[in-house]
Image 1 (cartoon, rainbow, N blue to C red):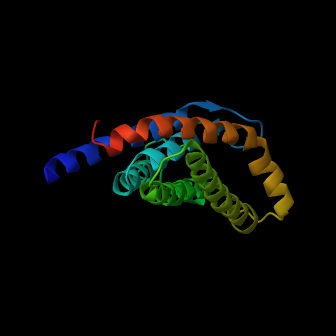
Image 2 (cartoon, rainbow, N blue to C red; image 1 turned 90 degrees about the vertical axis):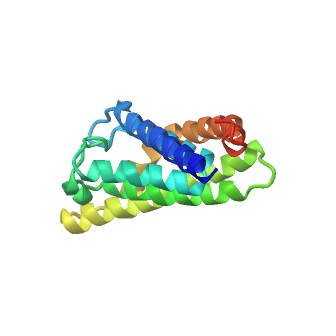
Image 3 (cartoon, one colour; image 1 turned 135 degrees about the vertical axis):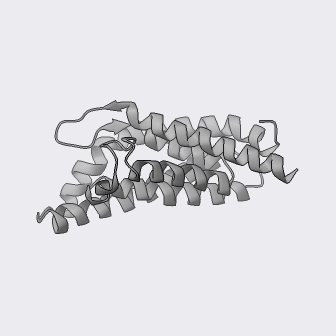
Length: 186
């Protein structure tokens, strides 16, 4: 039975890692900003649907593949990506996925509003870490002097409508999919 669990965990991790990668290629370029991608949708879905070990493995694999040079981040890949302002969002993906998954595993009764609340927590984690890192790299490493208001207006507010849609869609999807994964039907 343990071997079956390992195979299922690895398979689901690989599948959701692939979905996060695909999400980075579904993008709308924005002038002078990060592109709009579907990565956050798949990151939220990964955390909501998969058990903690599988979701962590999926997200860590995604990050490792990007850091070894595969161009699967929204702006490319490689170790140098760590010094780009967008890398904070990638770090936020991991912390959000782990947090979301840990909370979702503990749910006794699974109601749609719980998935929405957990997704909102995930988006909050992603953007707090992402904006902080963006500001750190932009102001300290790149020697600029932008205010926090500028970062919120530039890095958060333009993406808010898309993130609300991601929260709703990932919550609805997880509400329908998670029972099959937790009961071993997949």
